[in-house]
Structure formats: structure tokens, C-alpha cells
Image 1 (spheres, rainbow, N blue to C red):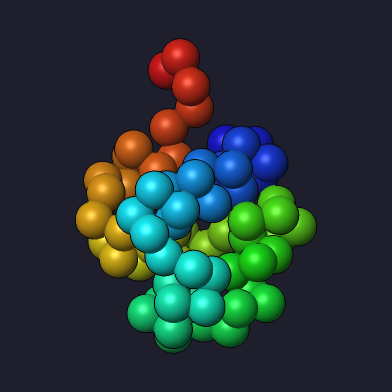
Image 2: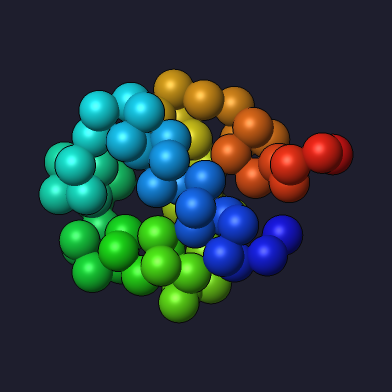
Length: 70
């Protein structure tokens, strides 16, 4: 998956679920800088972190990584 598309989806789901970057970063036990770089698409996401993001946001992993139209 394209990092930019994934970054947009992470940010959109975070906002949809009502989390600030700081709140989500704390729940994930990562720094705000790490989460911010994921949301900007400048950091390649680790699959384990993506799983934790999906679990924390209460969404399916496949929903998080799905490319529109697939």
C-alpha cells in the first residue's frame, strides 16, 4: 500500500474515533513524533504498529490498510 494513502487513512480513522495525536500516541506507547510521521507518510509503518493502531481504534486491520476500490 502506498504510504501516502495509508497515512491519510490512519489520520482519518483517528479523527473519526475522536483521538488527538497525543492521545493515540499514548495509547500506542509511541511518541507523538512517530505517529505524526506515520500520518504524514514519511515513516514506513511496521505491521505490528499497524495492528496496534487498528486494535486501539476499534477497526479491522484490513479496513485500515484497504486501498479504495479494492
